[in-house]
Image (cartoon, rainbow, N blue to C red; front, side, top):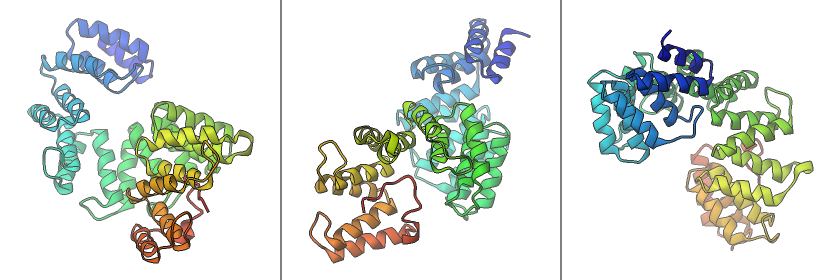
Amino acid sequence: MNDYELGMQFYKDRHFSKALEYFEKAANDGNPEAEYKLGWMYDHSEGLEKNNEKAMYWYKKAVERNNYSAMAMIGYLYVEEKEYQKANEWFEKGLEGNAPEAQSGIGYLYYIGGFFEQSYDISFAWYEKATKQGYLNALVMIGNFYENGWGVEKDTSKAYEWFLKAAVEGSPMGQNRLGLLLYGGTGYPANYAQAYEWFLKAAEQELPSAYANLGMLYWEGKGVEKDLFESYRWSKKAAEKGIKEGANNLGMLYELEGATCDYFKAYKWYTIAAEQDYPVAQYNLGAMYFTGKHLDGQPDYNKALYFFEKAANHQFATAQFTLGYIYQYGKGVGKDEANAQEWYQKAEDNGFSEDDLFKDHTVILPF
């Protein structure tokens, strides 16, 4: 085996430090695939701290040897910077070599409305092209289209099929999305035990969002025996990687669980998640202000209202219902029946039902 092949062997076994060693040897000998993998590892934090500058360096080295996938990945680096015109230019270069990463990149620009006018139909078509080359991220995206009904008829059974294809091929994103589908709430029958197994597979591949999902399952005791220590461990791993759901989980553990109850720490973790514009954490932070569980121990209705409205403006139905309740009964504000009914209607339009009020374990109700 040559250095690149040895590197790939270590890479597949997730021995990233050894993979890096052999990829560097191969790259220094001018191997474009090794240059690409080095760029990928720096880009995706595989055994390394994310470093876009080094990722760009190695991708460009691979581009010099006509690696079309590297051209596409440079496009994604520009997407991160919201420089969509430059991103499109690099995706177009990647398309010259029929790179599936470039096809997905064009699909993404249509999906977000970056550079192009947003079009789910055109986005879907580009992702579909990439799936025909077996590109795993594209398989996951097609599943997302079917799960959410973006430009296609909503079909959670088809979403399951696409997520499963990606998951079986080893995509951690596919495994995590499949776990979320099996967790329920989108119309697909819940199977918590299977959700746990797929989240665990994704976590074993070091996908931080899967850490947060495992933390939630251990806290709820769904698909696995309730274990607050394991919930804390997985949630903290997620939060330390910047995953807002993990930070929110930690906030709930500190707020609700008697042995670890610490409102100061709950407030801290909710704030970290809320600053990432996560509506669930914004809601929970509002609830702390509403009930006086924040730093000075006194209710602060103005701040509570501020955070509830931030969450509600993200179409978070529980927050919209809560605002309706606050205005209807004059909790910290003057009674306002018209405003109350307006918020209740918004919550209903977003699929809220009072039957669901106490089922969402990601939120702390203030009443």
